[in-house]
Image 1 (cartoon, rainbow, N blue to C red):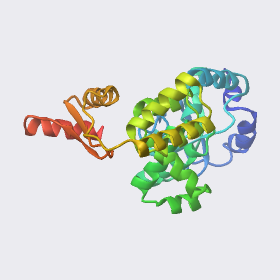
Image 2: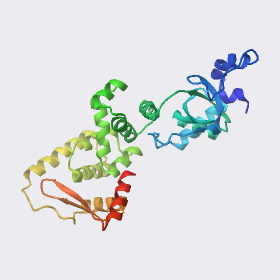
Image 3: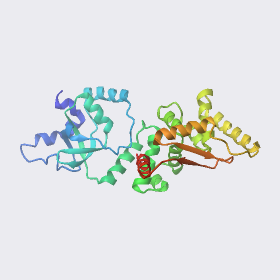
Image 4: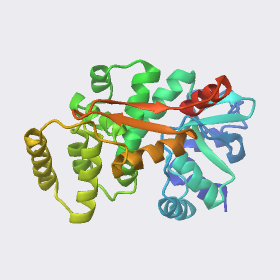
Length: 296
């Protein structure tokens, strides 16, 4: 594959003056040409381990690779230099993966200066603007901007041009049970349904709604009516002794948490829904191990 095909007509035209003027004046090598477009070997580019996007659909990567084989890589990656002859992707990992699949040996990149915090913010904001992120990835990006870059939801709203309520709705999704989050990721549950479920505080009711949506193909409006029915039934129900852990849904949640942390987990709730999660460990070593798992 020729260099012309690899880079794409648009970028080759953009860079033509640099190539033709090399005999007349020296051109700064890619390693020092900050804030300019450069051509660097693809094996000098590494991915960002803090990349907020975790799901890359292989079919879309393959389609993009075929396009790159035909037209070249038209839009350059944005990177920063981290070592001699090593550049880390700030934005464009999907294009990078497709270029690898297409067999490109070098890529056009825009090299900019960014410290770790600025790089994280750039990567998060760039990813939020994408249309192919799933709602959980968007929620995680908003949460990370808040936790790691110190922005309030109001500040985020101003910075990225989204309504505060929109940001709040996405962040609330992260509190949903993992089964519901997984359904959002694989598109078997809509954002509309998830927002309705997230508006319910009771974890058991959330799981029951999710099961009803899947089994009965409930619309968003029907799901809202189902919540009203749950609320009315709860208001009519007299106070009883706290539910036992024999409850099938509680047991399922206990088993999931036990599998996640590797230690026995108990969930205790009273009739009003208030409760506690108990994780049992034997000694300091197990406690430290548990804390490490929570940080993963």
